[in-house]
Amino acid sequence: MKKIVSAVLCLVMALFMFVGCAEDIIGEYMDQYEKPTKKENITLNLYIICDPATTGNALDTVRERIKTYTSDNYGTTLNVIYCSDENYAAKITEKTAAGATDHADIFLINSESMFNSLYAAGRLADITTYLNGTAYGTLNSEITDSLIDASVVLENGTSVNYCVPNNHVVGQYEYLVINKAKAREYYYSDEVLKTYTSIEALQNDENANLWKDLVAASEDPTQYIKTVYGMYEDKAVIEADGNICNISVYPTATKADVYSSAFAISANSVSVERSMEMIYAINKDTDLCNYLQYGILGTNYLQNEDDSIVRVKDGVNDYIMNPLYTGNIFKMLYCEELEWLPEDAANGTNQNRESIYAN
Image (cartoon, rainbow, N blue to C red; front, side, top):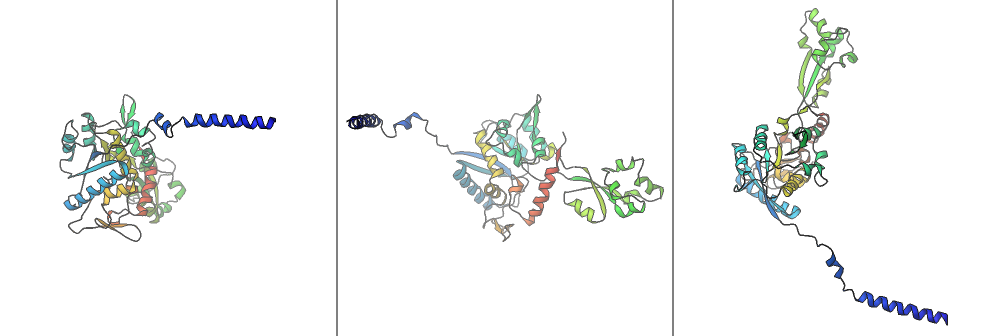
């Protein structure tokens, strides 16, 4: 009897629960949550310098491809406006003014004087919060530290960012080169010679001074002890020729180096945030980076079996851009004509790792 009563009670409770559930309309709870907003497709103008050998047909073709690519992938139509180097800074000054026609949202900076002029005129957007945030902050690790450090502007003791440097190989080394064979004639070991980082340091050593020994022997020390400037890979070549090669000065990023190639955003941009997204994409998206640098595969360049490329130069589809101007060079396809091959990238990576910013 108790089992029967218990079963009836369970049935009654189930009926009440069913009725309660039936009162809720399926999907009605969705109204309690904010619906995601669709990203509005906007057009942003990017001003950049192209080589005068580039044909009008190539510019039109690549421009349309980039528009389609960014619209499909980022919800932003990036309209690239190609300019000549002549009077470029004056053009950007004009196109960043409030109310300018064909206004510049994003633009290439290619000189320190150009940056300083635009900064003084208040034409540059402050992008510090974007570079310090999670959405775009990875650029700080992608771009060489010395370039990032050199790009910062100090305002009342606070670091402020107004541009994103285009990642490239920084500077060059200053090497102290000593002829090993000549040094051994005077009983100097390699271990001793490797302790010197400059001619001055060698000359001032009171205990072991090869320079003075050569002078005393009526020999010209400048024939055997020299300061040489070169790249990371040059050190191995110099040493293979029978020399001690010591680093005197590491590659140094300067303000002039940074502002020789950087992207900035106009303070009057349609959208500073969406412009920042496009700069981020140029630096991170290899497809977009290579569209901007080389154009379209099969039309503006051909690809070899080793994935390196050859630029088309047929007088119709010639698309020629300076790799310094088009984003992160380490994201670009290799091109022998530009002396940019895997070994160049590897050497450049090592050189940048050792580069410094001396404020």
